[in-house]
Length: 254
Image 1 (cartoon, rainbow, N blue to C red):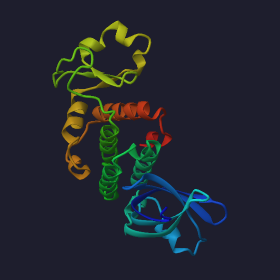
Image 2: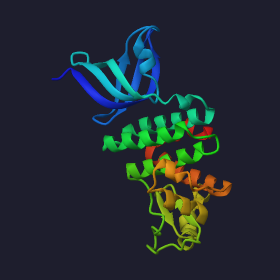
Image 3: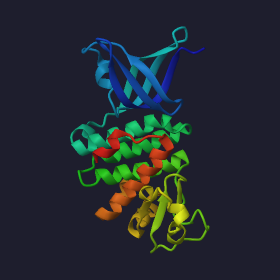
Image 4: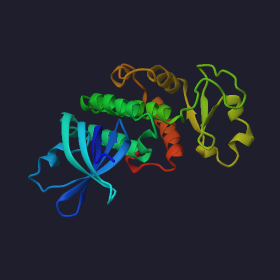
């Protein structure tokens, strides 16, 4: 079994381990999420190289006897210092990292997951406080598609009709499905859980459908009014909460 491994990776999280070491989590194109120990004190060059959102070529030694991994080198290609220069960028980047970790890197097609994370973080590095939230929403919607949990915004799950673009949509998180206004108005549909039903107005729906095929930077050309923003946020986080089984605390910081 090969003990020296090489990955194309983005560092997502780093935490102290013992007095001098650290544990690091990476999204890799080859194996998805991996965890490895970074040995060395404050003077170790790996401490500056292995930091959240750095991207490059990761070298890992695997000890099959202990079933453990340690970082031997990290050839950083993309440093992204700008993500720590603005609070909104930092919180959005942390939300992206924790979402990826909570969904185990998407569970497959890790090269695609890495590409999506790379493009989003690179766009976010130059974002201002007004558009960081839209970059994050764009990532959440794209990640829902990557996970296979994104609902169809054009067809009613109940009657299978095509929903007019000027009509309100209703999302039921219990079923993970979109309903037209007529089907959503049925008392059996609402039951006692009416407060859990999420509304999606035409503006929110149009933004989601328009930007879903765009790169993060291109998606910034399309604005959202405050009401539509709240509804997009409610929808995408409702979808991801159902997929993960819990709501991540970082999601409520923007």
